[in-house]
Image (cartoon, rainbow over all chains, first blue to last red; front, side):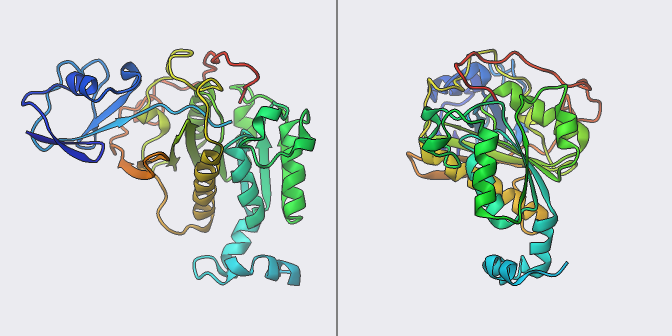
Length: 68
Length: 270
């Protein structure tokens, strides 16, 4: 199936979970990333059981703390 | 109040814009913006807002200028090392534009003083470098119904979003709680390319100016991310459902300000 991750279309295995996608994408500090699918937040703690569907649009939102 | 000849000349490139005009320039001169943090982000914000003729600029920071700040904090100069950042920032802004009244707050911003600090301002700039401060500013602005610009910078990356009460998600809608101390790099160990403050801070100044003018579309409901190495900006749409947010939702569970534990990194405060 095809999903869009951070603006890029990619082919992934059917029934891929958010947790697997996070591992595949080498997401930095995965325990603190915010994930949205099709403009909805994925509840933290549900990444293992959240299964992606064909056409899903996924975004990873990262903490960015610097400023000084 | 009519413009002086000097003001007409100083602001001529603004006044000629149909989105600004004399009326818009007056709005800027009557506006009050508070910048929290006089560092990498706060420096360019303060300078562009001063140059633009924002009538009152508040600036809060407890730090003194350090030599290691000067790679990015362009409001301070070598002669300012050791001076309170708010004092150095005030001197630069006043030298740039005598129309601007600069109010300095040489203090940490905490749950005790933030409501008092923000109450007289029209727009708040988060130019801080740590999560406790970012969550504190968010929660205080939600509670006081004040618009603000969030930003963060690290390495070659930056992000920003704009919160306007009732017009989209707040920072806590996106990030529920601060990460544990030292779990996410925030500090000097991670590094930041100096010009990143210029890119992202200038965008924060732009959002403040657009908000005051009431022109264009603000970055409400979006997180703008910038990757300098890829030279890529992305405007990521945020979920519009804010009903369940712990602070700006329908049934807030956070009704008092929280001072989260500060990440430990040398000499870095706000």
